[in-house]
Length: 150
Image (cartoon, rainbow, N blue to C red):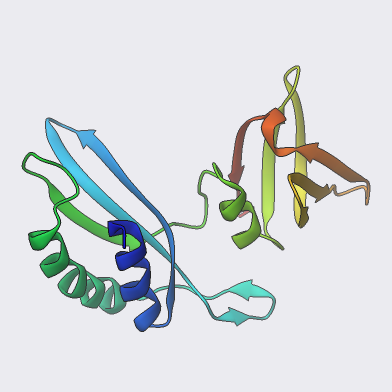
């Protein structure tokens, strides 16, 4: 099994879902970032993840990384939520974000904002505020993210 699939199993064991793992360098420090989301849907929206759950996950994942480190140098483990506004970079990210507000930049600098209603194969389907359905091929997307209107 790969490190990511092992982490996915640990995350699933506490009733959460793995969103992403990434190695980043910030302020001369290497960070192994594990982002999670809730599996629970409340009132049509994904529930939040508590700080206690993130701490619990840190304690569960840390021993695994002692045996199978994600990088060959020193690093810091950071476990947290993917956030209410997050980048969408994989088809899996889009599938996990159905029902949320998204902003896409695609093709020749075209933009669309609306509700992500469906992922059909590699097609991303967004319903705009004007009830227009826009279909964008995943490979044509330059930049995508979820957003929250205050």
